[in-house]
Image 1 (cartoon, helix red, strand yellow):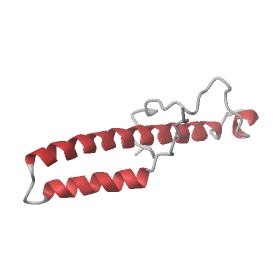
Image 2 (cartoon, helix red, strand yellow):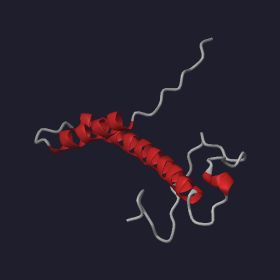
Image 3 (cartoon, one colour):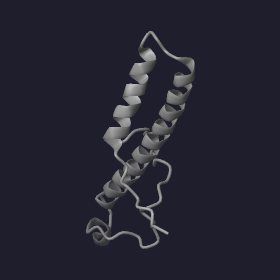
Length: 104
């Protein structure tokens, strides 16, 4: 039995593929069966991209919290909570109605 290797998520490649699918749908000659397969692939890519962006947003929020006024010296030095699991993506963190990565 061979071990499965985990390949890092390639955000730019997935985004480009999703853009290509969207462009394909904008063309005048769209085959219904091919369209259904492309739609399904596009939805899969969109979900993966959203999950990845949520993970990145959570990491940004943790970094911002470490350097916020009142953060302890241990937090600012980059020591993280040993109970946190960085490998597990979670829902995007939002603060006071912020909905995107940069809080705009």
